[in-house]
Image (cartoon, rainbow, N blue to C red; front, side, top):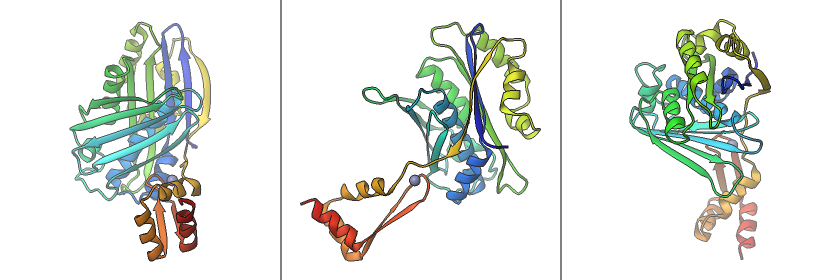
Length: 288
Ligand code: ZN
């Protein structure tokens, strides 16, 4: 099954719903980062969470989710936009923990969850909450309530294939009360969500994101707004890498010229941009 997001709205129940499957983009990211199983699971949670937050934004808006915990993974940074482009990395991809499926053990149970939104207005919107559980879906639910004052329910799921190397299935779900409405509809849906098997098991059994939403919203009128593909997509480029070098001090640039080359490695996708001596000399000249 390809990765995609489904977005619905239930106007009478005052709830919007998002559900997605992210298996391929998580496996792709894990491969790029040579991630150990625990880091793969964490990336699965993070990439899915950011895809869900991104899909609730308007066109051209972006979101970044940063988790800095006291676990051995140290830090995870994920970015997504409203069109299903997602990228992310963890600080220690080679991390080893006793149970790789225990995302809280890898991330840590104490620390900070930061969400930065570029809403294409003046400045950035930033919200920070302390981690409460290290389980990203519960922490994100708390963040949405505390920082954005939007009653929400988030469920993320990552199921590893036997051998713990590849993700068998990853996906998630986000339910939110519509702005300025009573959260009564959400309460009913949250109770139903608790009664359903975990989303990773539903997806593993062949249910599609729209099937999971249909099961949750049974008997509640809703409308499907859109379905769109999700993919790992990095916005880095030669121009981006060059800007990183142009910002260096003159002496640092001269050192690189002496060394004969400069390598700019993108944290998000591990694309390497290599500039030779001549290119660096031109950059130095253009500064004068
Ligand atoms: Zn990149």
